[in-house]
Image (cartoon, rainbow, N blue to C red; front, side, top):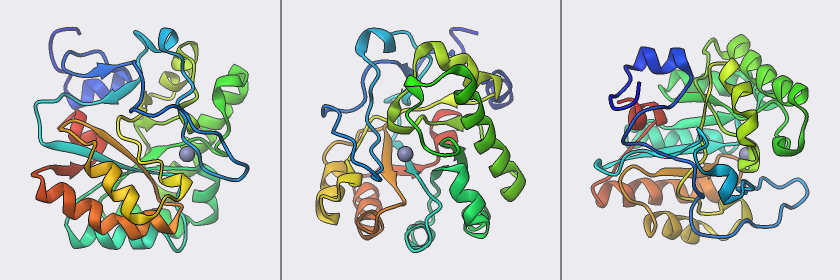
Length: 251
Ligand SMILES: [Zn+2]
């Protein structure tokens, strides 16, 4: 497989990222992991460098593009997701939504709205635990239950999986691949979960994004919805083409 691009079908069938031009492993963007707060949504990267090297985790796409993937984690959230959808609709762009299975069960209509608007749905576990410290059986259940919830309530089968907090061991990779999921981290993290203000979220993204980046946001906090128009406008002004993960990686 090495040395040529996989076709989309091959890629989805294999659940593996094994082609040149993509960057795997390494660290997520810039800042050191923050301190998780109770009830907060903190997507820390807890992989240490040595473990991440050579791991099959996708951090970003190739740099020779103006495309950037916009990703939203932890929804669907009534009150926030609809506002994000409205912004994306206004600018006619599509994004990838890493949904928590439990929230899909609670708000199936909203999850369907995301699909109906042409966005990509992806797996972010059923209850958002820290998988890196869990048994293979529990990790399997978390991933499988989310996959089931999205299939049952929305009728689509995700191809992408993002571990909450970026916490996932290389040795756990085969569990995701058994569900034919490819593991995605991120390369631009505005830390919107820490509620730094819409302006700061926007500036952190616009100041750190290059072609091929995977931008991490959360459709869980109102500040992220507040920042969304400025993020999209700023990316477009700079010549970027915000898109789904599949469009960035496979498009
Ligand atoms: Zn999350």
